[in-house]
Amino acid sequence: MEGNIEGLSSAIALVGYGLAAIGPGIGIGIVAGNAITAMARQPEMQGTIRTTMFLGIAFTEALALIGFVLFFIA
Image 1: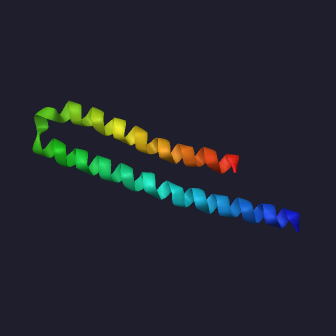
Image 2: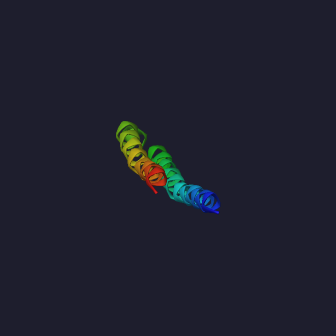
């Protein structure tokens, strides 16, 4: 019976991580989409916008990595 409970706990943790990955995925899509729009409006600022976009993606991706680490801790 205890093995079954551990398996259920593991399955719930997997589902939780999957749900936690949705937020950063949406965030990265928003960041990239807005960066493309900004580059289309002001092509001369392309380098600055791209740098800012990559920083935004890195910070957003950090949320997914924190969720991944919490999956292994729990």
